Amino acid sequence: MEIPGSGYVVVGALVVFFGWLTVKYARRLVTVARMMRSGTRTTGTCVRVETEPYNRSDATRHFFAFRTADGRDVEFEDLAGWSLKEGTEVTVAYDPRDPGRTATIAGRGSWPPVLQSLALVAGCGMATLGFTAVFVYQVIGGN
Image 1: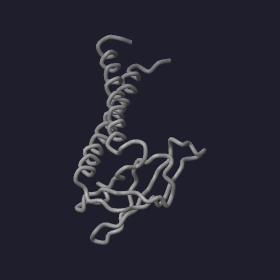
Image 2 (image 1 turned 135 degrees about the horizontal axis):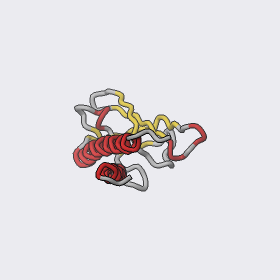
Image 3 (image 1 turned 30 degrees about the vertical axis):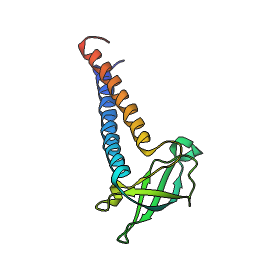
Image 4 (image 1 turned 60 degrees about the vertical axis):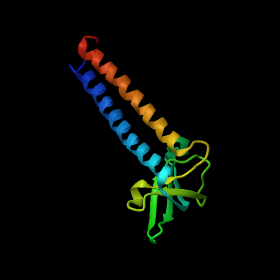
């Protein structure tokens, strides 16, 4: 038994979800690019690496900490390569007006920070466009 309109709801929800992710990562891309170009730089440390159950390598979260020029301690999560371990020193770029929201690792391994964010925007953007095309096709008359 099929529920009428359920296909529209599922595909519509996927469009909204991937659209939201695209906007989120696009905003982060702009922040990262701005910090890499003109952010204040300091030394930070990888303070914690968390893995999801079953140690899936794609589910590793890296947390970093640094001290701002005015003495505030800031901890943030950022994308990082699998080779970064707890205690590793890194260079952090940030905006002194809002270090917690703008901090990024400046050079974190094989991919430059801007390219990592750009890859996320491109991937989520393509998923949004693909699901939007499926949704429009369903609405116009396809099944």
